[in-house]
Image 1 (cartoon, rainbow, N blue to C red):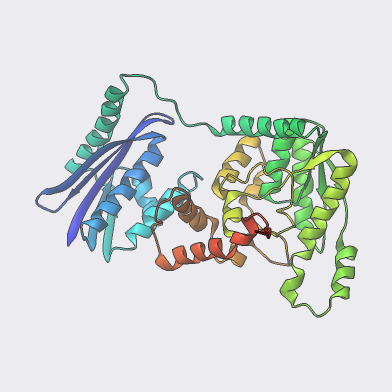
Image 2: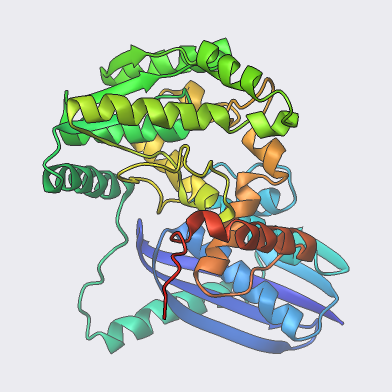
Length: 386
């Protein structure tokens, strides 16, 4: 069965009150109309949300062929792969939309304005108006801006330091995006009472260069502790291990170093794991996961990039492929076997208690990663005598 999907989103403000409008029809008649208020969002987020809702409805109606009409030429080009989605907050939505589109046998996408597109716009705006009536014209609290999130996170770090009667923050500065963001937040929270430790261990020269770049950008105090010889000594003492068995020695040596230096100075150790990596277990148990506070562990990877831009992290770190630098040529996405965009799109659904949309094999792989790594997130089991 072929259906025609016309969708649109509207937002009063940036971000502000947002509504979605969806019209599903055949060549002859309207099959379904949807006009709803969705909360606070930017116009682009509303447009993608409307499209995703429409795609799910078309699938539920049994459509196998779909003609999609959106009123944004940019969005149409993004859906067909002509343009890449660059806005971090849109990437998961675009990935979800594309995954749903692939579930249909035949799909065409256009940005030609039709009568039903105008109707979809009316429905979206009607959703906002109906919401305003329900709340008796009371102002709607808008979503927090990235700047507000940065301020709150920095204040939280300062609060945790004070509560622990500590003097400051110590962290490992790897040259990656996550440690750069945590370092900048710590600096904002604690000023000069932040020490960043660069700990090369058979590391790539570029990683150290990028760490120095971050330190210079935020005027951070640094010290370098080369762990290469220590690593080699431990490796020589355990020659029987398989090659991958040595990979986590480096992260655990780094955490040992941070706690030794942190204890000496009375500083809390700040972890640098984000939510995406935490959920799938992409961290070293008793390595980079061992810390006193986790400032960015509630943020998905795409949110980390948003925060990095707000803080002014050097562009080179934002655009380079993420890597744990565990071995030469290693990248996070290459080792995981999925892109962060794919992961974020699926993980957000799971966090919200919803079934993810997209390729079933990819979804199952992500669920498998979560299940397999549960022991890394759970509290240590303790035997209790009854």
